[in-house]
Image 1 (spheres, each protein chain N blue to C red):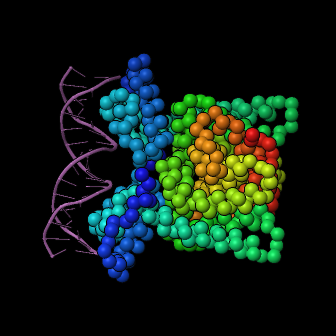
Image 2: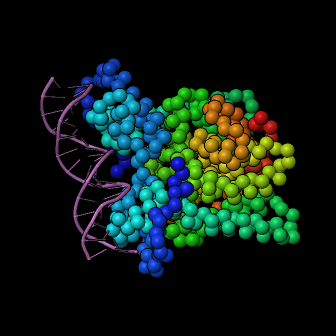
Image 3: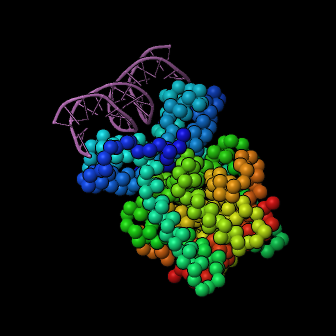
Length: 230
Length: 230
DNA sequence: GTCTATATGTAGATAGAC
DNA sequence: GTCTATCTACATATAGAC
């Protein structure tokens, strides 16, 4: 049974302003802590402590722990999809012929830009997206929040490879997404492996966007057209 | 303090045969369960139950929960590095000039091949490697188990891009690894996104090796030489 | 809507008999 | 080396006063 199909605890009146503030504090705290510790590594008590509310309020505003987790992922998913689709539509309305890299940028840039410059909540959300995308346990959330937009982009990408196998395009897209998520979660590995000074400043993350788009474009053009996969 | 620097519980004699069998059962069960549920999502009681031993034996043979987790990752890491380095040395000893894709294949193929055909324990181990690589919490394990070999391969890759920034090569390598790990953990997303029939058979995983190598080669050649990153 | 108090279960770890 | 029994802490969730 999906955690998303269950509605929130039924309430009889519209929530008060005070309630909305409390609720947001709880969701914000949960976002930060879930992103850092994962679902199983974070307790509702941790969340209540960080939000400065008693434990019972976390259940009241967030529902069960699973519902709370899902609620947080859903919260920003529409906004992220909006940014991506808006960029894509703007591109298609423009005068230039579509390029593969431009399409890829429409998908990648909103995520990276917000992870880099959207403040700690968006950075946490970026990590949360990586958790959800990597763990089959959350596949229902992925399917509801991310797959519709992803499929649209796969269609756009596939148009650059006429006659190609759709599962090859999908695989290339998944590789691209995994590289994108690595930007938000694994830059510490890049630093460790390049023996460079630490790069703790999240602002430079944005510098890697063009690198990522180049990598994905080159990878797709090299792999999808080749007959490597039957 | 690293979990790896602590030695195992001191024992005065070499373990008996019976002990070795019990220990292996415990480690195998832990490998399967940690890979499926993650560190925090798996209890020592689950592991003891699956191994068919009392809980106390898990502590006796595995040490603390963290030590047990680290022990499992370390257990196959040397073997994996061996396979990769042996393949690389074989390549360099051969008559042909090195190609980038051949070098990449040396790194990628042992992992994919064992995830696909090495049985359930190796498949679980592949997922475990993905967990360790994605979570900064395990960076000390990454550094001990995987970074030395990774640095050697980055050196080899960098030789194909003279004058390039080492952190760019490292980033391209991290992207490549993230795509490799996605093969072992996220093929369900490919199936969901391509609307294809499920692909539950792990044997076809190996078919994707060439696709992955192509993707990585194309991505590196496109991204590293371009001046996208200062 | 909020919060105290608590019900109920499970976690990791170990002491000490065998 | 093995295993029973248990210690202590913390988990999620809710009942019911305010």
